[in-house]
Amino acid sequence: MTRRASLWRKIATRMALVTLAGFACAAFAALFLYAWVFENHSTAAPRPSEWIPHEIDYLVIAVSVGAAVLIAIVAGAQLARRIVMPVNGLAEAARRIAGGDLKARANVDDETAGEVATLVEDFNRMADRLESLTTGMVDWNAAIAHELRTPVTILKGRLQGVADGVFEIDERTLTSLLRQVDGLARLIEDLRVVSLADVGRLDLRPELIDLAQVVGELQAAVGPRLAEAGFVCDWRLEPARVLGDPIRLRQALLALIENALVHATPGPLTIRSGPLAAGEVGVAVEDEGPGLSPEAAAVIFEPFQRASTRTQGSGLGLAVVRQIAQAHGGAIRHRPHNAGSTFELVLPAT
Image (tube, rainbow, N blue to C red; front, top):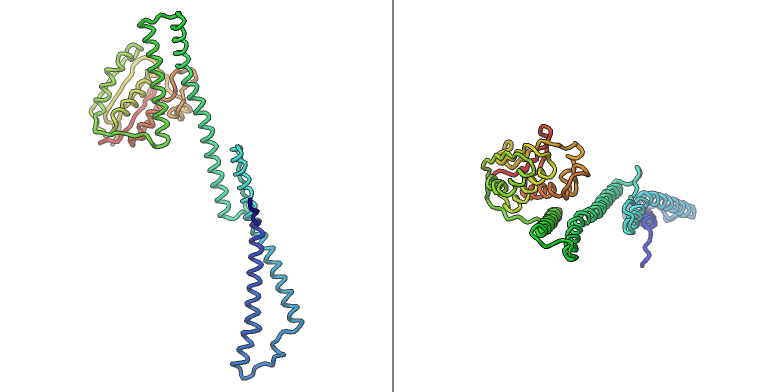
């Protein structure tokens, strides 16, 4: 690796060279230019002994040049110090981050030059973002492993029981196995949607659809399950035309309804489609409890977030709803409703 000269030495050297160049220009003007003018354009030209420097003149010039160069070197070193110290701290922090210490940061003080201070602050913001992404990736991988482990463990246990003759392969056993496989497939699809949306690669195939028709299809599919779970559903379906991907919107709406099925208290459940507010259309799901605390409501749309540790589910349903809504130019929002909650999937009206 080639050893490079330090920045402070380069700055000091160049300031000294600039000072010497200035003195050289001044000496040339004083000793040669004026002499040529006096000799060629003056009727009273001074004698050579009057304008040619003497020994004392050379001594004064040498002392002045030396003092000026020394001042230039000191000033250059001070300037370089204000630049080099934060840059060295920046380089040291970069080396520590490259070595795995993601908490390393560069320091900046009041004497640091403005551009260098901005560079250090931008580097620290980048390091904060890198640490956050790395921590999130670790948590994400751990959460994925945890969510996949449960259905896989159940499937393995049931299949092992069938292989050992503990369980008989009857309709009930097959239904249970298919239910676990279906849950695993849905979990994988939810993970896929969230991952693609995070990198901006969630592809849509939009077409003009009626939300009332989409919700009506879900009513026929999940209505019996809701009734079996103890929910008294009030389906209020008004026409609302939107431009969207029907498959993705059906996936989001199903996740929104199943969120109520898993987390809400059995009882009245209102599902509305149509106009929600001025210039807004969408689907709203209103339950009667138990509601969300302000802390839970602030993070409920993040992946793997649950209202409490006692609730079931993967914690991906509302995250999937948010990503699909945002991909359509809409949003998902929560607001309290009596003792429960209202979740609204808002889409641009066509």
